[in-house]
Image 1 (cartoon, rainbow, N blue to C red):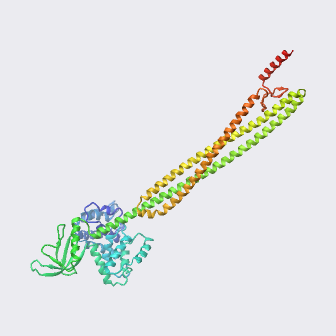
Image 2 (spheres, rainbow, N blue to C red):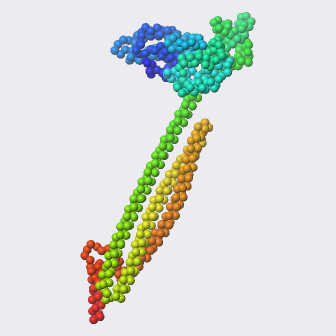
Length: 578
């Protein structure tokens, strides 16, 4: 279509009469299908001339020819008829034109092509009025549609005008069916809905037509009140019955209610007061007419729009507010869902890390046990070797049985001390490993406790913020709060479990610490005993790869320096004895 880029925002701020004018003209042009491929200069010329005549705007045929000139650029570059209509006609409108005639001309352009061919319960004139009402109540976006809330407002108006009862349940079913398929109705679908009699069952054509005319007068012609009153003549002071029509700034009176013979107007402004000077007219129903006039004067003084226009603006603002609240709620739900997914990912990551840590711990334990078995095998071999050495030593030093017996006794004591020392060292090593494990466990528990506390504080803050929301939001988020409270209870239970685990870890740490102190004391005690006996005999340890020194006490019993020192001591003793 050639209308892309043309919206109500092009019309605002340019001194044009109202948005409804542009919506009506847009609907008419859309209905005539003025596309870039169907440009007809003669047709556009006639349409432009008629529009200028109705809108009281001077027609410039030269501008039309220039806009659609046949050159290299052509009408495609100018984007068709709508830019011309906006620039050369609508921008020049001053507001002093007959809106009904303007609407009727636009209706003539589009009704023939779009009006339903199926028989309707309303006349073409009534369909025209419904079309104009649609342009007034439709949303300010294209393509034009009327939303279910405005459909309900219009049908209630028509039902009230017909004197029938409003069937809310029936409309609710219709609204549910409508919302599942689309956002609203077009003008022609609205005409079909009203013309089908779905919401006016039991009413004849005349009653429906009168109701449409009454709503048309109120919403489009701004008729606030109409009816017969007695008017006092200017020259002849007799009272004559006249049909009065009250609008926001004028009271017009006619001979009869067919509005064909107009007798005069009474201009209203903020300085008017009731009763009018000289008792100009007398209402046949004082309880309804004079209050209506007084209300109109009050609106003029306050500078307020007619009630139906103000009500339409409030309904529109309410829909926008509800839409914004719904979008905000959807955004919050999306954020909560994202946060929940992130938390699930974090928990999965932590679970995998714990599984990996457990696997590493099991592998380390396996390696430790294997190393321990290897050490035990090595020590067993060493002990076997030592036994063989002792047997050789017993054979070699049989002549020194008493000294050997004493020596063997000391060897057995040292072996026992060596085993106890090894056990003490193993206990000390195991205690240190247990202490390190407990420390890591305590650190991890403290980190998890801190993370849980931060998470609890965050959820608590979110709950506090949620409490401060409006009552409507509280009702909407009640289920979420229950879920959060359940999650909070689970987190509290996890926190208590972590606290118990941390206390158990502290108790294990204290127990391991005591074992470590005991092992350290035992190690120190055995080291002292070994130091005390070091001068008598050395611990039997695995020999080095260097050549061993063989003595009568066995291989590798002394170092070279000690052997030299003992040799000197023996020589000195021998010399002294001689």
